[in-house]
Amino acid sequence: MNVPLLLVVAWLCLGLESGLSSSIPGQPGFVLPLAVLVALSAAPGAALWTCLVLGLCVDLLTMRMHGAGGALVAVPGPMAIGYLVAGQFVLALRGQVIRRNPLTLLALSVVGMAIAQAFACGLLTARHLAHPEFEWRPLAELGRRLLSALVTGPVALVMALVLLPLAPMFGGGGGGRRAR
Amino acid sequence: MNRVARHSPLRRYLLPGSVAALVGLSVAPTRWLSALGGPADAMGLLVAPVKQPVARVVRWLRPPESARDDELVRRLQDDRDRLESLWLQERDENTRLREQIRVLQQGVPYEGLAVRQVIAPVIGPTPGSGGGIVEVRAGRNHTIEVGAVATTTGAQLVGLVGRVGPRSSMVTLITTKQSDRQGERGIRGRIALADAARGSLCLLYPQGRGVLRGQVEHGGPEPEVGQVVRVEDDQLPAAARMLVIGKITAVDRVAGRAVITVAPTVELDRLSEVILRQTTDSPAGGTDGGPP
Image (cartoon, rainbow over all chains, first blue to last red; front, top):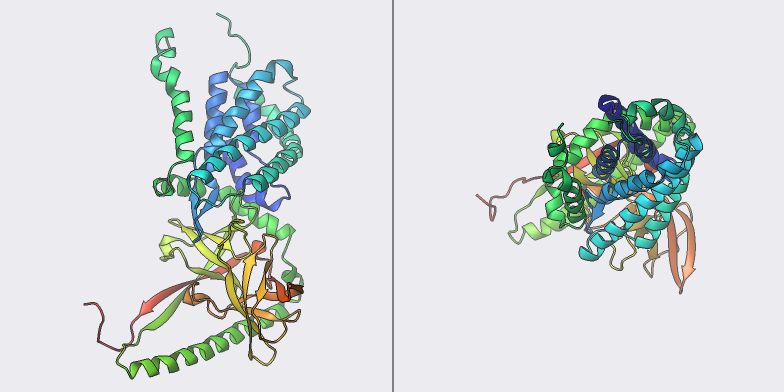
């Protein structure tokens, strides 16, 4: 795996997610398609760690309101776990799909984002139950996040034009058995 | 790497251990997470070189409505709004000082109030907030504190600072809906009448679609569409006094009470810069009763 290239692309995707996502109706994700691509291309261990770290970066960039005073705190964990589960889902399916097809990235990004957001919602709901001062509306947020998963599809399709040519550099020989 | 190292217990349990730690952090008390402010700030600084140009391009592609008006007219309107707010603040301060004089005659020392202002460019909305929380380029390096008031260059209240980093701060917009729980704090405001007389008080709650809504207290003049609502809330910092919450866009009647919908005079999620107003206490005169 070309780690420096992955870091640069991840940096760009995090910047896009941070600066652009809230301005687009539905708030699509720009980091998850990258995580899906890595999960399609890389060795399983590297793919899972990459998904975990990307999700953790998204958590650190997301401020959540706590208390009537509106204090803003980053909660690490929900999206990290969500991205990890989404990555595991892609790993389980990657033998069955055409990896270099943009539509594959679209479909897996939509489903992967839905899985990631569902897990994140579950953890955040648990946080709300444990700490009522955490501002959280479970059903409304779940609906909003599932919509975000749908809107992530077209974004993934556009990103596929740039990311798919780079996929071999993220692979590092992953996705198949190594010759011994 | 040899086969032994590849299958060492540490490597085997590192991922599950990390997952367990992250699940624990997801439900950890808030005071524990506050210690993680450093990594969060670092991540924000790391992506800022990409985030800010992207946000600037978005603002260029979708300028706020006011930018389409004639520039001179907009500046004159800003000046008018600012001067009107200053006049109302001075009138309010005058009333307060008269009360202070009356109290001073009973021996209570006088305490003054100063407001420091910092112009802060808007970096962009924070992810996952739906545009309800924006990041601005002024933080502890400008001695900004949590609770500072953000306004436009006119007199429109934008929001309150909810988090301060080394070089940036997060501002929660006044139209950001926080929760559906009962007891959510609204903003108390007073409807300004055309002749600068004091209209009715109202308590406005954010609705999350760029507007606030709330009931008008009984007994005052009937509210009308187009009237300005200004802050009159002791729970907010003094720097927010008499700032504009917005204009009334709709008046409904619910159970015999007037319910107004108020929209800010500008689109708060498309601003390019805000003014952060930090209240500072400056005692003026009086030597009795103060700390050494």
